[in-house]
Amino acid sequence: MRIDFIMVNRTLVVILEGELDHHTCVEIRQTVDREYQKKRAKNLLFDFASINFMDSSGIGMLMGRYRSVAICGGEVGLFNVSPEAERILAMSGIHKLMRTYTSKEEAIQALA
Amino acid sequence: MRIDFIMVNRTLVVILEGELDHHTCVEIRQTVDREYQKKRAKNLLFDFASINFMDSSGIGMLMGRYRSVAICGGEVGLFNVSPEAERILAMSGIHKLMRTYTSKEEAIQALA
Amino acid sequence: MPKKNSMQIQFSSNSSNESFARVAVAAFVSQLDPTMEDLYDIKMAVSEAVTNSIIHGYENREDGQICIKCAYEDELVSIEVIDKGKGISDIEEAMTALYTTSIDEERAGLGFTVMQSMMDEVQVFSEVENGTTVKMKKSLGVE
Amino acid sequence: MPKKNSMQIQFSSNSSNESFARVAVAAFVSQLDPTMEDLYDIKMAVSEAVTNSIIHGYENREDGQICIKCAYEDELVSIEVIDKGKGISDIEEAMTALYTTSIDEERAGLGFTVMQSMMDEVQVFSEVENGTTVKMKKSLGVE
Ligand SMILES: Nc1ncnc2c1ncn2[C@@H]1O[C@H](COP(=O)(O)OP(=O)(O)O)[C@@H](O)[C@H]1O
Ligand SMILES: Nc1ncnc2c1ncn2[C@@H]1O[C@H](COP(=O)(O)OP(=O)(O)O)[C@@H](O)[C@H]1O
Image (cartoon, rainbow over all chains, first blue to last red; front, side):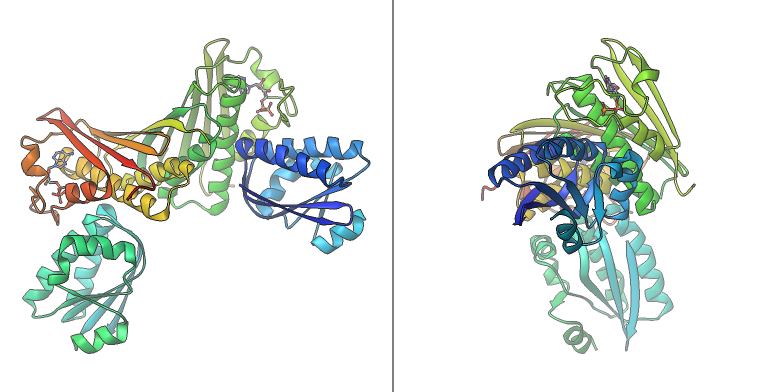
């Protein structure tokens, strides 16, 4: 699992590379939460382009981030979501809590 | 395992794609021998560009082809050999029986 | 290609083995030349069952053993994920969507729901203090 | 990453499982983040041992069982390939380079030579009519 960050305005962009399962989500959760606090970010935006596997642990991780970001008045967004990842996102009903954007630019603008 | 053939003069070029182990070598042996006879070829030239694994079964398969081709007065050659495949080829001493060429063109010319 | 084959893997309840389990099952099922989508479905279902054994069955202890039995006959793949962990007292309740007993872990309560939606058949056998077996079946190339 | 982990796989002596065995062991050893070369070496050694069990141990019958035990502790990987096949009467002779008992199969007689050159240590235990166990060890990242 590789995790990279870019800060755009008050949105922390999280670039994930690898497989989203229970094992990697434990690491992602810690690393993202630390960076979110350190950067005093408002919103979280996940780049899913290099996610080549995801199970329901990924849903749990996203819901967890939604809860902590909501406390700070921020939003969570996703972009570059593959059709495979989209299937489990749709199944989980998580779209009620966070939007999937078609591009980074669109997301940054919407979250600003 | 995918096996493709091109006939150039009297040399049958065998393009292999996949892993060379005991399981796939059984298939390769049958397919190559059949095509060699059908095409009345003299030489056999293996393109190793898309071989991503090879163990000693590959050596046995090459030695077997060497024997049947030698009976018909032909030669066996290899090209596009990766450093990994080269290690086991060198270990086996098979270079005494067949040459590794740097390109298809060089091989075709030498075998003509 | 053989039209009948079976294998079995055993490993400790260490979360880094979740990925190993998926890859091993996928490598085996690949012998049937499945579609990418079928393979992804099977990896998801295996991942959910193995994760449950680690988190719930063994409550994150790393010294438990998990066994996966995998077999196919023609296009029918069957997979069993077996743990000797704490077991489930009410299986029906556990299989309800969004139901989870985890508090500190961030669980969505969707593990069984994913298994059921990815596979054609999911059966759960469990005995409290004696472990859980999840049996799943999927016919490849069938909608 | 755990610095100690173990797994075990069992499968029938079908030659299409040679590839499955390599992938499963490689997926497990990958937890240690090995170099591509070390991983390739291990795949070769496993492939040779499993092929021997299929061809020689079970003489190409597909109903035999092969077991691979794999473990690591820090950087030391150990792999056992076990069959219950016909066994080897003279292990020293069998391990000689270019020695082979195959006639119809095209064998180079290099299986054990490859295992020894890819791994740091190779031990063979065998009993006629009772099977063969090949134990191999390799320290990752060591020349
Ligand atoms: N192997 C298992 N051993 C013990 N309990 C289990 C096991 N698998 C599932 N459970 C129980 O069933 C519940 C629902 O499981 P699941 O649908 O996968 O959701 P989640 O894993 O997100 O909690 C779990 O919270 C747990 O209480
Ligand atoms: N698992 C095994 N069971 C029985 N005999 C074996 C086994 N492994 C190796 N042998 C014997 O040792 C010989 C040498 O093996 P090897 O060096 O791998 O060469 P090859 O497989 O090309 O014959 C084999 O020909 C066989 O007689």
